Image 1 (cartoon, helix red, strand yellow):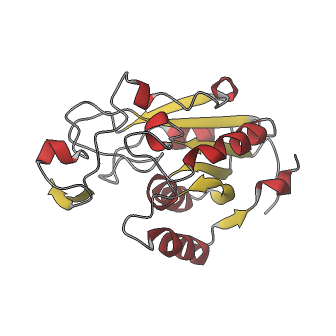
Image 2 (image 1 turned 45 degrees about the vertical axis):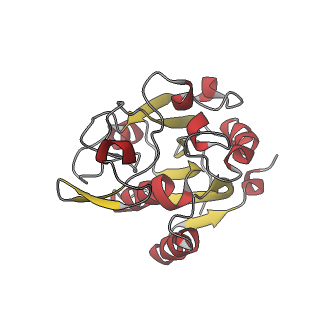
Image 3 (image 1 turned 90 degrees about the vertical axis):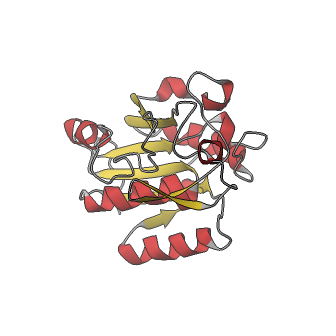
Length: 210
């Protein structure tokens, strides 16, 4: 792994109010990554932020199905975990954490905008076919290495890393700039082990200095 500013892009995945403590789907200690991400943005020429941006009747909501939280349902052939209503378009919950340096972003990618389709990955919707446009943008700026931060390790960070690997990018996860929801219990350890086995590099933010 070699850091070259012109070839590396920093990705901040879903650092939104609803995914931070006190939010509708708060990730334990999720807000602790904000300062780390802010420091990292000063080292990268290309910075991307993603934002879950769901309609009120979204397929990922337990309320849409009348099902218990965290149950898995079949959504048109896609296995879908159902969550609390979160990141509804235009709400405070969908806004970025107020401490995040959003002005550093070169581009903001909104995902999960369709009622009938969720999007964990920053590159593809959950049908694994519909692109978000991020891959094309990364290639247009010459990025070959994607440094991932954000929420949550075992869902949106995980699927983003898988898709980035499949697309041929070098993938680096900044280990002190991600946090997991750990649903089901043990999920974070499982996905970290899997990603390391696939060639994802995990590094502390200090490798890029203060």
